Image (tube, rainbow, N blue to C red; front, side, top):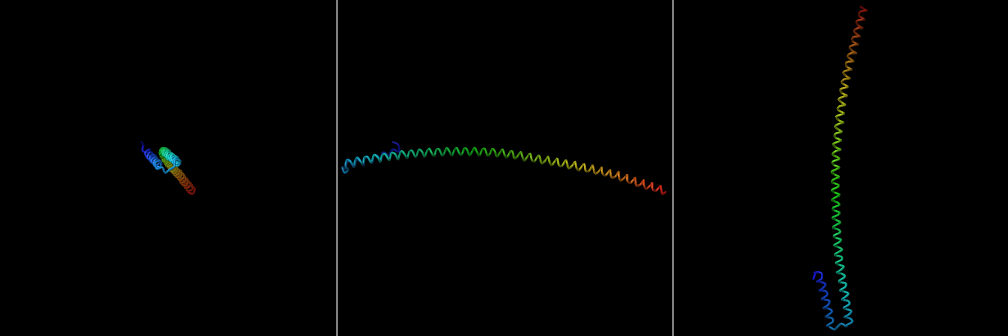
Length: 160
C-alpha cells in the first residue's frame, strides 16, 4: 500500500468500527443507522474529493512551478543572448571608434604636414621676394647713385 493510502484506510477502518459499535450497542434505531451510514458515505466522498482536489492542486502547482522554471530559463537564455549581442555590438563600436580616432589622427597629421609645407613655401617665397626686392633696391639705388654722380659731373663740367 502506498503512503498516501494508509491514512485513508485507517480513516475507513475507524469509521467501520464506529458504525459496528453503534450497530452492536442497539442504541441507534435502524433508520438512524441508515442515516449515519449515508452520512459516513458522504463524509467519505468529501474526503476522497478533497484528496483528489489536493492531488490536482499538487499537480497544478507542480506544472506551474515547472512552467515558471521553464519561463525563467527562457528569460535567462534570452537575457544571456541580449548580453552577448550587446557585448558584440560594444566590441564593434569600440573597433569603429578606434578606426575613427586613427583616421582623425592621420588626417590631423596630414593637415599639420601640409600646413608646415605651405608655411615653408611661403617663407621661402617671401625670402626670395625679399632678396629680389633687395637686388632691385640695390640696382635702383646704384642707378640713382650713378645718375646723381653723372649729374654732379655734368654740373661740374658746366661750371667748370
